[in-house]
Figure 1 (cartoon, rainbow, N blue to C red):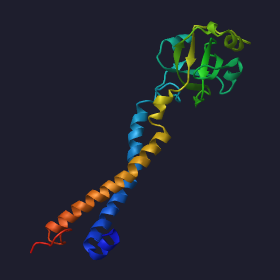
Figure 2 (figure 1 turned 135 degrees about the horizontal axis):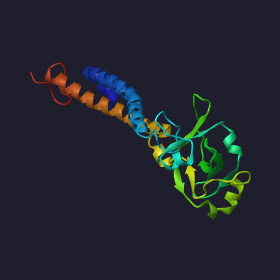
Figure 3 (figure 1 turned 180 degrees about the vertical axis):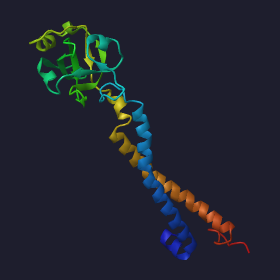
Length: 221
């Protein structure tokens, strides 16, 4: 017997289904906000991840000493664009990106690798670059890149560079794409599951209360 014929023959089942379906729809509509709340908590644990925009708790780095004294930090620059024009090169390795000769507020210069720029403006008119970390590397092993970087100004240190590139794997854990995929997977499943379970429970309850007959067999007198 098809659902249409079944509902026409048993109005009680149709009513129970409509009630269950209504609750199922409401449950499904609640899924996006629940998913967002979950991933917001995950993202909150990653506010100091390398490559992200500096937060209120990010350490400011004004000198090489500041850079070497902290696991993660944000370099302070005077201008939002000027730091890009003192020497740069495109580093074509397994994770290619631009690398810049950046002047710190102390006047010292270091090499900085960056893919996506997320600047944060400070009250004094300076800017914070993405959250970064020190990457030990002998830049003299890349003579062509070093030559381009030092075309106008020498670096004060060539035994490391500051990495401002984000960890793609970590970022995917709470990205918009991940949220959307999770919602698309859970939302229809939630609606169907809630509807099915509630429909069965409603029918069992109405049968026990003597309001409706059993789906199979006659109702007990």
